[in-house]
Length: 104
Image (tube, rainbow, N blue to C red; front, side, top):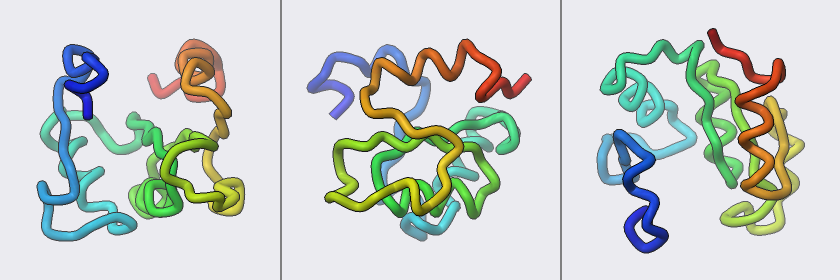
């Protein structure tokens, strides 16, 4: 998918469901990513568009940004208490440059 949008250069690591033994909402994939990138989970942010993305982030104690479009299949993601909700991908940059998700 990253290649189809020509954005793979922006990612140091890309893992899918087949990369770990347990699927989301189990947080294993998030812990694996944090470990491989040498990032503490407390300093990570999960950007997701599904219930399982948000449940995995919550289980890992990782802040989350919920995208209201995509795979959510009409589910109201607000029910899963994401840190932030975005209606458009372009809104995400704001949260990384504001006090909302400062992880330093």
